[in-house]
Length: 317
Image 1 (cartoon, rainbow, N blue to C red):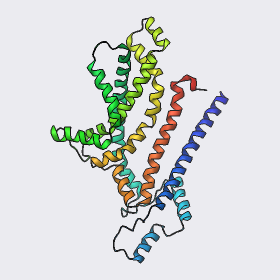
Image 2: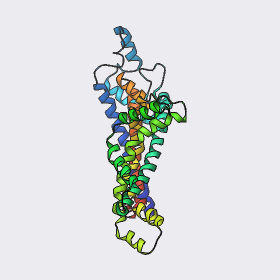
Image 3: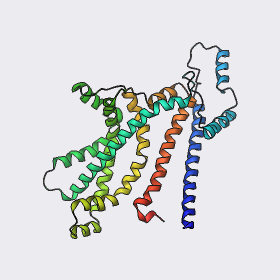
């Protein structure tokens, strides 16, 4: 018992150290790569006298040696989770901007995540089952197969244009911009979920069809188990591993992938601030966005590593 607990604690410590090192590396790389870009945060402001620019750089510590700026900035991130002030939004801290924009991106990503998982797994199960049991012409099978193969290659801005034109302009059913109520969330969430839904559907279809041909499934059929037990208690559980490997980091992927969608639908999320911050060389805000999303993605990958042994007993050792 003690040995098992020590192994578990060692595993948790290893995962935590991996997470912290990843964040350290990403924040350091962001710091130096942003400084390599031409220009400065204040070079786009026209008619700024040299003495004014010097005072601005001194205010934000940009006149100090680069290595001194680096150690000061990194220490603030890891000791106080402080990303400093924004260089382009006067009198605003980066964390205040993140606190304002992150709920929008997280809500949009969460809705797209739920939609993609629900529709993708349901459609994949149907396709995987019908691949071995289809009799005659099945319109739904061919529609879902076509969607799974075609939608995966559609860029978000193309999907957004199609949905806006169809549901927003032609039928005039849904608003096509801003974030002022639940009805404003539908088109952006659908746009963001189209590609992941198709990808999950394809993974589930392949995994489910392969699993359904295994000997233990045929044994369950021979024992006379009902179709629900065979589908969900035997086939789906054993087909979860490849699905879980993709679903794990999917939430982080959807949030980062929402930048284009947020821009198209004029949403006040992280995408808006990231694009403008990058154009304006707002070093601190860009670094904060990169670090936050990298932390989410890294944590998602680590969570998948923890959940895999729970699904597959072979990995528990």
